[in-house]
Length: 346
Image 1: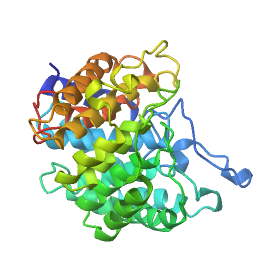
Image 2: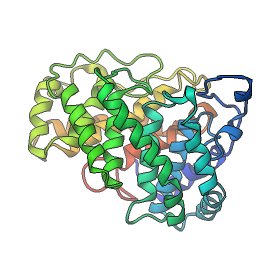
Image 3: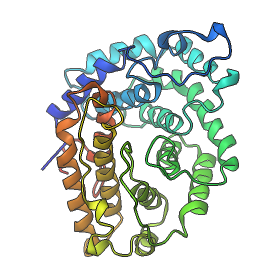
Image 4: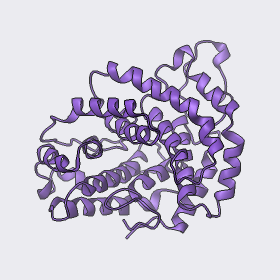
């Protein structure tokens, strides 16, 4: 059995504190429009300059604020607060926001980083958060800028992106719908949910040709987790009947078999640890929407446990995974039947 306990929270927090301010190595999403654009990560992104890439730094901070809410007395709490005081200032947020206005930044971090930034802002604004309200006030303009980007982009997105990497549309909609709900942006919630229904509600008999070698999301299960989030409780089970009609027979079999990771020092191959964690998250989300007597519910929970067992020992250890995996471990460990609370058994 795996649970988010104080020791695990401390391990995740310590790892995140080590990478959100580690500037190098760094894989930048940066378009050079001229020689004046040749600048380093911290010069361009005074908050999100660490963690190997911008989006991982964003959800590294989501990890820290989530753990701070759940364990406000954890040993790392004071370091988290002090670092947040240093970085989450109006001036630094203004610089991060101004970066989006550059001519080459239209597609910057779309849609994965957009969704994670909104999740971070939502975590900082939760009613029971342990975060200082100065930080949530400071980040508000950046969150508003990314919300506006979704409002502009979604009407132009004729088709969903179904790959299991950063471009996956279902993942972005799942996070953004939740975050927009916390932030009380009802229009964005409605836009995300409408686009999701348009893209996915008629899908049937998913074949699940996965995993691919560098995926960290399951295209099949991510879609199911999104639909679980937005469909009324009584409707999701029927949709799942059509989407995964042989789930009781544990088919497609690939969805139940944790991915094998051959080299955790290779950043792309290390994505597969994230696949196992995100599948666990999705399976627990699916289980939460099924009645206690539904035979698919224990099957989904068993699959979640198998994937967590395969991945949790590897959340820390090699920087290629350590700079981001704790976020996906938290998604999985806080999801599923019952409230996502500290000490929840998974």
